Image: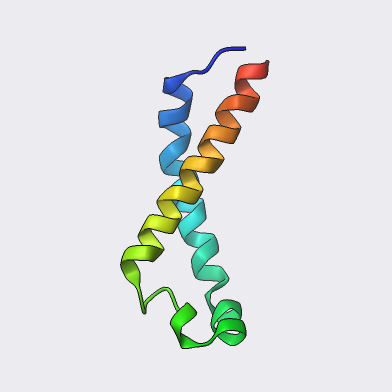
Length: 69
Protein backbone atom coordinates (compact mmCIF):
# COMPACT_ATOMS: atom_id res chain seq x y z
CA UNK A 1 0.00 0.00 0.00
CA UNK A 2 1.77 3.08 -1.27
CA UNK A 3 0.81 6.74 -1.34
CA UNK A 4 1.66 8.35 -4.66
CA UNK A 5 2.00 12.10 -4.79
CA UNK A 6 2.02 11.88 -8.58
CA UNK A 7 -1.43 10.28 -8.62
CA UNK A 8 -2.70 12.76 -6.03
CA UNK A 9 -1.43 15.79 -7.98
CA UNK A 10 -2.93 14.45 -11.21
CA UNK A 11 -6.34 13.76 -9.68
CA UNK A 12 -6.45 16.99 -7.63
CA UNK A 13 -7.32 19.46 -10.42
CA UNK A 14 -9.80 16.99 -11.94
CA UNK A 15 -11.53 16.52 -8.57
CA UNK A 16 -11.60 20.29 -7.97
CA UNK A 17 -13.26 20.87 -11.35
CA UNK A 18 -15.89 18.20 -10.62
CA UNK A 19 -16.46 19.74 -7.19
CA UNK A 20 -17.02 23.17 -8.76
CA UNK A 21 -19.46 21.76 -11.30
CA UNK A 22 -21.41 19.92 -8.60
CA UNK A 23 -21.53 23.07 -6.46
CA UNK A 24 -22.95 24.99 -9.42
CA UNK A 25 -25.46 22.26 -10.21
CA UNK A 26 -26.72 22.17 -6.62
CA UNK A 27 -26.88 25.96 -6.26
CA UNK A 28 -30.62 26.27 -7.00
CA UNK A 29 -31.50 23.57 -4.46
CA UNK A 30 -29.23 25.13 -1.84
CA UNK A 31 -30.77 28.58 -2.31
CA UNK A 32 -34.30 27.14 -2.15
CA UNK A 33 -33.49 25.24 1.04
CA UNK A 34 -31.26 27.70 2.93
CA UNK A 35 -32.07 31.09 1.43
CA UNK A 36 -30.01 33.60 -0.57
CA UNK A 37 -26.98 33.36 1.73
CA UNK A 38 -26.47 29.81 0.41
CA UNK A 39 -25.83 31.16 -3.10
CA UNK A 40 -22.19 30.55 -3.99
CA UNK A 41 -22.06 34.01 -5.60
CA UNK A 42 -22.84 35.61 -2.22
CA UNK A 43 -19.51 34.41 -0.81
CA UNK A 44 -17.17 33.45 -3.65
CA UNK A 45 -14.13 33.00 -1.37
CA UNK A 46 -15.82 30.26 0.62
CA UNK A 47 -17.15 28.69 -2.58
CA UNK A 48 -13.61 28.41 -3.94
CA UNK A 49 -12.25 27.18 -0.59
CA UNK A 50 -15.03 24.58 -0.35
CA UNK A 51 -14.38 23.37 -3.89
CA UNK A 52 -10.64 23.04 -3.27
CA UNK A 53 -11.22 21.24 0.03
CA UNK A 54 -13.78 18.89 -1.52
CA UNK A 55 -11.48 18.22 -4.45
CA UNK A 56 -8.55 17.49 -2.14
CA UNK A 57 -10.65 15.04 -0.13
CA UNK A 58 -11.79 13.22 -3.27
CA UNK A 59 -8.26 13.19 -4.69
CA UNK A 60 -6.98 11.69 -1.42
CA UNK A 61 -9.69 9.02 -1.48
CA UNK A 62 -8.95 8.13 -5.10
CA UNK A 63 -5.21 8.02 -4.39
CA UNK A 64 -5.73 5.77 -1.37
CA UNK A 65 -7.92 3.40 -3.38
CA UNK A 66 -5.38 3.25 -6.21
CA UNK A 67 -2.63 2.69 -3.63
CA UNK A 68 -4.44 -0.42 -2.36
CA UNK A 69 -3.95 -2.10 -5.72
